[in-house]
Length: 384
Ligand SMILES: *Cc1c(COP(=O)(O)O)cnc(C)c1O
Image (cartoon, rainbow, N blue to C red; front, side):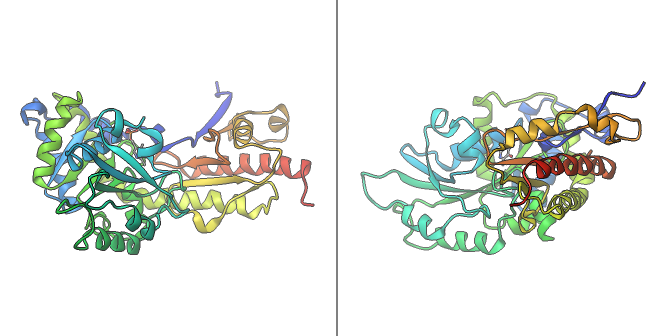
């Protein structure tokens, strides 16, 4: 029997599924106790990821949140330190303020611009000086691609200027060096979009945390990369956070497949994301729009411009099959209605995210549903 609905789940790339190749490699992975450093598959994943990023060492961690927290803990090891992050960054919005409640580090925010950057002038003003009243500025974090800004690829020129600024003599507190960390949960998407390697993007960064479980489709895990001493200290602190794992090569095996098999295909996700964006844009709807210029990777922000409509209502509507949809043939090849899942929260936009399992057929279904629902709105609220 055909399923009653065909679901295209675009809420997040975290819903991506491990590939068949991942499952096969997981089943046959050689393993050992990783807390003893004896898991060959974990060691391979760490070494290989470090090499790809041009860094000395890597550390496999359960989540991106732990990767970011460890980076903050190591870079801001002195008491009384401050880390500067974007006000729309994942670290500030979605990690429970772990930097403060677990690491004892004060987070200060810089206003994120729409392109995922922040003002370097403002940063310069916000870096602390030699003054006993002030915390010590120890770290600046850049998120790339920038999630809430819509999968924005942070420009290389910005990264270069940022590095030049924090490394300038006399910037910061005494001899304290200001470290740079990249929350690179989706930095491979940035690389695919720019057509350069991740090592170039992260060249001047002391550490990078990447997610294997987002656009890379692995079931779990992140890798933190950086210098040898930095990783040694992060490895020590990972144990304190409960992140010391045993025969975890089972999971690292999926990460290796992600690097080999999924990374080279990220450009395809970007093309499909653009295809959906173009279809919405072509409707020229007064109610629901996309700015094509801003679609740079696998995340699409759909702006709701109709004041009587919220992004949550739009998402709910996309997730509903009305009887007349079936009557008018808005179905898949088996006659099932189409459900598109999007995320909205209390944002002014709905977010659609593509990943490995969203194929051309699913994109086609999603476009037809979006065209139908937006078309209904346009009949109800025509252009004035
Ligand atoms: C998902 C995400 C993280 C955290 O990863 P988890 O594995 O969910 O802890 C960090 N930064 C960004 C930008 C993310 O999208």
